[in-house]
Image 1 (cartoon, rainbow, N blue to C red):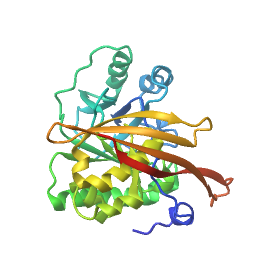
Image 2 (cartoon, rainbow, N blue to C red):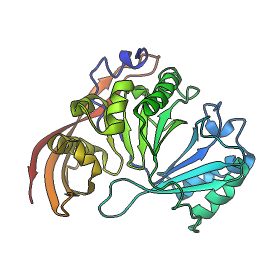
Image 3 (tube, rainbow, N blue to C red):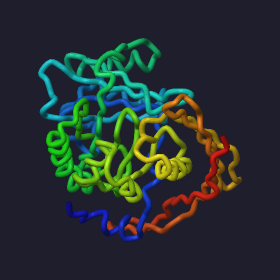
Image 4 (spheres, rainbow, N blue to C red):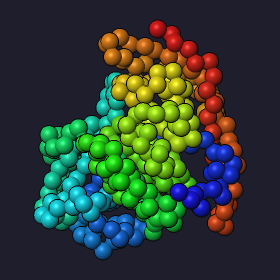
Length: 313
């Protein structure tokens, strides 16, 4: 794939994508066909009752995100899917998933309004073990996501078919952040973010096999963890290998400097025999200058380094 856009910025300064897997209060995905406008709620297919719900949604879930998804082959007449992913307390391997089916887009607002009010909207028994992989193709929001995301979406579907991987759905998605990493991917319900994928690296993360060192340049981080702790988690991946992706973890911050440039984290994980391993590490936040290539002002981006990683029990 030709990385025409990001080659002039993130790759040029050797940006490390780790620590950009933004934590969300929730992820709400609504099946809605493109084209999507830059503000996706202004798109032609969006009914007024759903458009008017946006303000209420972000009042109740200020750190949540609502996205549109689409896959022409999965689309069914008389069926609109709503997928809701919510954090899990304690040891977790991702977010809890609900999938609700309604007859049309006009019915989505009613379900989401009930969910925002704390009512039970069901859906936990619909496709609970399906892996939903989002590829940002929202070119109206950022041209890189259209130029890189749309071709990669087609390639990703082909990779899934060629490998015969089951229980995986590939979705076009509206913008979820990190367009400088296009084609950028969000893998749910684990909630892991990836950057600059191509068919080869996608096959690797799809099957959790092959050269794990490829994660050094494509892994943005695991959204169940704070951004600096995501750098620590990547170091633990090198120690445990692909098996790490089946583990559940919990994380706590032990210490943080006043300027938030230094953190000490403790990350615990349950391994297959049921025992718990606990690690501590220091994470230092540095900055690198990213030059805008489209007339925008240069800005500083955070880069993370890990030191003193030890197993404490």
